[in-house]
Length: 395
Ligand SMILES: Cc1cc2nc3c(=O)[nH]c(=O)nc-3n(C[C@H](O)[C@H](O)[C@H](O)COP(=O)(O)OP(=O)(O)OC[C@H]3O[C@@H](n4cnc5c(N)ncnc54)[C@H](O)[C@@H]3O)c2cc1C
View (cartoon, helix red, strand yellow):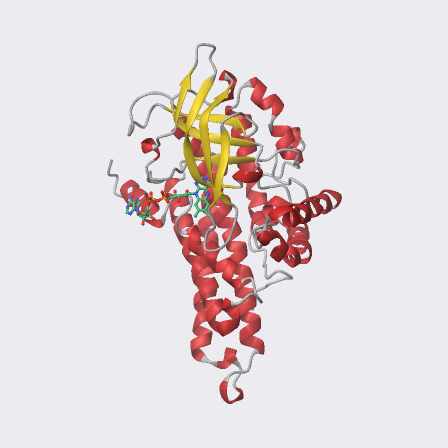
């Protein structure tokens, strides 16, 4: 039988030394985070207060910022080991923020590509949870799948500072963020792959505005934001001027792999609920649901999807960790993991009947994440095209 543990996690492939840590993370998420999900989902000050409480508890229990660099105050768990923790923490959408691992992408990007001042001022404070950051590429009216088409512009002033104007949307976490990394055109023409740059903007800067929240299938957390002649110092440029896409690609590859791991955790959670329902619920004529062959088929297909996706995701993680070219592996993992989460959550809802669509289980939220997964960080079609072109050696 599938080994499940408290949150429905087995630990296949987890290095022996990290099984206990993965169990502690899973335990924290299932016993502390999941019971507070409804408050956290509702947003506003009650959600912020609940999250601060969880973060305090995570620090007290030594589970804070596990994958963040040790020299910045994190615990320095390396990516291959963190991969198993990410699956456990990701079983709840709120797990990574509660445990302080969510800022990993921002911290690595700022450490690797920030100026001396940026490295001095921000990464350690983000790691400590004193500041938060978000990342804004996608724009209204512009295909997110075509970054060179962005309309946001940054113009360098006589004193070297940058003045940024434009709009972004679906920027996760923008309303509560202290910093936003913005993709803007600094040189060249719309459509050029060169000439795009990344700029780090403190959200306290004059001209920055949160325009509105954009609920995704009813869930909050995504925002439209505006930059109206926002000025940032010259040293808030990340990486080389005009070379943003290389930095963005590095960030996106790791980001996609981490998301896939979290989606595995969520699918495993949906699978656990499906299994419980099939094992406990009696249907028509007193027959246990799990005795119905069509229900068994849902269970089989869901387990197959999880078990066939997991190795793809870990292969992508291993290649990223080794610094190897990983576009094919990440593309395969991203499409497989998004599909898997949507499929498993859908099957779990089906077996729960109307209850699976109501407020009594996390299944609607898991399904919503699976649906959005097929679009965010590049829609399925983009990854399919990109993998196929590489495999076929087309330019
Ligand atoms: C929950 C959520 C969180 C997000 N968080 C962020 C964030 O923090 N920061 C950020 O910058 N963005 C974020 N996004 C935006 C996300 O990255 C974009 O939605 C995504 O990149 C796709 O861009 P688009 O929506 O503009 O779709 P478009 O580029 O307009 O594409 C629309 C559709 O066209 C089709 N299509 C596109 N390209 C191809 C192709 N090559 N072949 C065939 N069909 C194609 C696909 O069906 C695709 O879904 C988030 C989105 C969601 C839903």
